[in-house]
Image (cartoon, rainbow, N blue to C red; front, side, top):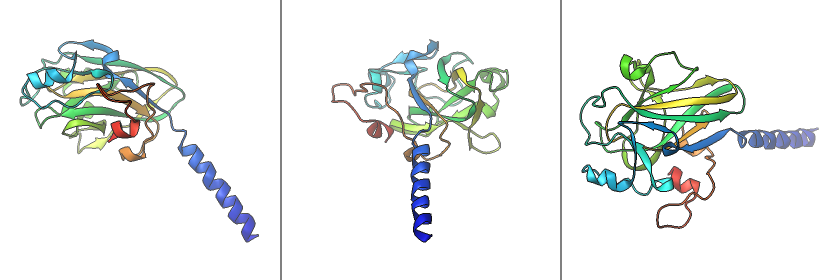
Length: 218
């Protein structure tokens, strides 16, 4: 009997590993969304032109941001952003991550909202901290999960989504906060090492050989 239970335990463990490996994850290039000013599509040299360090080669060669030197507060006049469409396979709880770069404390935030899943309001106008994403600072590209910055604390956000297409809006809040990729997943781990990011075909760094997703993730 003990041997039978051991075999059953191994089979169950293998099944759990297989289930964990099938989490839904889709990554989309931010610059492929609908971009409205003052957010624009940019390249690393544009960051250097604003007096900041270049963040390294983004996937696809471009990223989105509201150009300008980092300044205190919300200088974007409550306008602009990028709208991304993602097809969700089934209803459930999802998290959103971004591949980001942020120079300092004056260039490290966006507003984030999913149409239909969030209240019908414009966070740039209401300044509702529920929608405010405090981006982890760093001059190089790194993955950061969308949170609720200072909404009674700072908590990782989760969304209850139905199956089908959704529109994810990432609105400008501070100039010089950079966004390269957005990833939507039903893996709710808060550790980026636990997320099996699925790469698009032929992700390449500018002037280099194909970059692995694990390298991009770090």
